[in-house]
Structures are given as C-alpha cells and as structure tokens.
Length: 247
Ligand SMILES: [Zn+2]
Image (cartoon, rainbow, N blue to C red; front, side, top):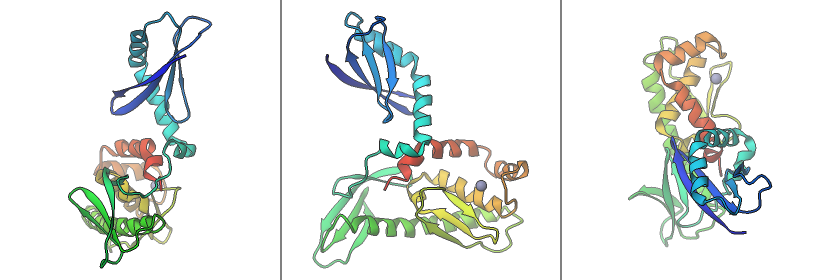
C-alpha cells in the first residue's frame, strides 16, 4: 500500500486529498472525507491515478460543500492545531496572515508592533505564555479603533442612532457580536483576525439591532438596504469561524 497527497482549489476552497492504492472489493475509486478535512481516495490497483484526479475535480463542488459543513461545527477547532506563539508562526490580522517575530530586546518593555509585514514582539524576556497576552492587547487596540470608525461611518445613515453607542470587546467563542436590551454593544475580540468587510458587517448587524432587537424581516431589510451583499459576509464567518477563533 502506498499513498501520496495532492491538492486542488475549487472556488477558493482548498481541497487536499490523499491517494491510497489499496484493495477495493468493487474495483471502484471511493472518496471519504476525514473529520480534519483530508479527502481519502482509495484506488484499486489497476485504476490509473489520473482517474482519481478527474474524479476529485468532478466531485469538487460536493467535497467543498462538505468541507464548509465541517468548518461550521464547533468541533472543527480540531482542524486547526493550537497556536504556539513561536517565532515565525503565521498569525491573522484583518484577514491577512503575518509572521510573528519574537525578538529578544534589552531595553524594551513587552511591545508588539506591525512593521514590514511582520508582527514583531519585542521583549526582554520572551516567553510563550505572555506572547498571546501581548498580541491580544494589540489586537484589542487596533480593533477598538477600527470599530469606532465603522460605528461613526455607519451610524450617519441610521436615523435611530441618536448618540454614539459604546461597545466592549470580549474574547468569547460563541458569537461575533451582541446587543443588549439597554443598547450596549459587544464585539468578539477574535474579530481582529477577520477581513475588514466582514467586521463592517458585524458592526452594521449590531447597529441595526438598536432599531430591531430581533431577526425579523424588518431587521434584515435594514441590514440589506445598507449592505446588499451581507450574505457573503455571513457565509465567510460560517466558513472561517473556527480558524478565526483559534487561540
Ligand atoms: Zn443578530
């Protein structure tokens, strides 16, 4: 038995598959999707590998649909190994990945800075336990400034917003934003890793709750009038939620 891995992209979804030459009782290629998203293609000995590549391409839409469903499940966290906060590791910020650089430095108190496409963490005593704290403090500062700007811009077109709402950032794994009965807004700190357009959608969504505290037709009309393509952003969170909430 031998195996090898391949990958193709289908409408932006990466499909990884492993070709396994093995015995198949029916002499046909079978496809199976593992919980971690890897597709196992079992090929009978006399079937040529090209037949498998063709089959995977033919079934790409079906596979991508299944991968999307896997990503929606809370257990999809297992797809993404826990972050280690080590030098060179890739970290998300506003929908892009940047390498984290852990840079020992004599004189600087723990400080995180974005420069030349790198997330630079300067510390006199680098320590994997405090790196995430410093990174998330930086995320919070950046996200707070961004959400403040979004609220100001969006509220201008919302007659029901008469004074600037205040908001808090919370590190939770349950939801992206919420609005209390008193009109207090909360946003998930993990949003710092989402794309700016997706963040705008969450801010818009919560601001519309200040007019409609439910998900009624009228609520979605308020959202749609201001962001006709909002469904795209909701799909983005469904597809990437587990990755964005990875810590
Ligand atoms: Zn809502």
